[in-house]
Length: 366
Ligand code: COI
Image 1 (spheres, protein in one colour):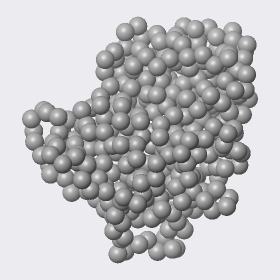
Image 2 (tube, protein in one colour):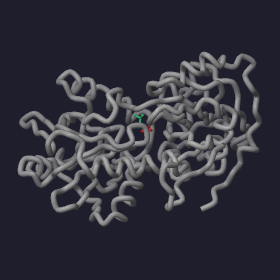
Image 3 (cartoon, rainbow, N blue to C red):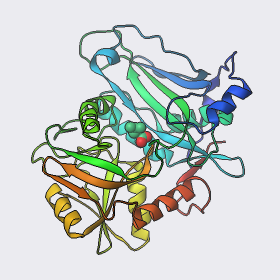
Image 4 (cartoon, rainbow, N blue to C red):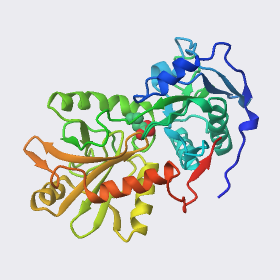
């Protein structure tokens, strides 16, 4: 599939004070996740009268926002996450950017924000990565994490569809999302708090969903758990997602199951890629409701042999322990499972250019 290339539509205003080679080398040496940022960012401005009217790559800098900006009061904000990978030959690639562009459009429609075209989305990423191509790290499992986001900058305290909006992209040289690397995470099954409800914003990638997941995550952290598993808000029994990641389970009979998209779950790009990869490897992959009761029983009697979480930032992360108010179970032997690790290897081999991309998923940026 040929994707549109519109990087040329972006004007470049280079920073007068680029990071020194030594400081950049330090930032790229074994980076943590999401702490350092490259020298430039993308900005596009939208107004009700003129639509999207400027496409600029400009120096990375704090934003100047009027305190009455709508986003600061009503959280009209949506975002995406994708990565730029440097291959062994020095070329730079990203993974399925069209899928992220389309998801940002779906989030925009749900949050009454203007849509960024697929051409502008991909062009903005190409333009930024071409200007900051030296910011892509090369240590194992590192990448330049790209964060496109749209905010309502309308200066108005009334609640209405915003008349002024900005779309920005920032880039962060990043290592693994979980500091411990590929280590099984422990999961607290949350029954008291819900991430999303029917008709809500669960399927949109909006900041509010993540903000509301923080308090339960902190409480789970105090109990000694890494992540929270959210259940549906009606029955508190159907597994939805982890807040920042989708969920998969592997059964003894070779079936791999993941919660069906029910309107409350974020449609992960990694999730859909895993479904394709495992289906082609003759696993029976099913999207269906998974209840906590089934999960508890299956882990206890050995029918559920592996479970993992996935997302752009975390890639594929094994789950080793699942617990709630009245149970505490080790999944399999508590170690990363074979299916989990093999699909992880297959996916990252494609992303880092170590294996042929027979799916047409990779898009060259520079
Ligand atoms: C991603 O996986 O890219 C996300 O946006 C999740 C976020 C919590 C880092």
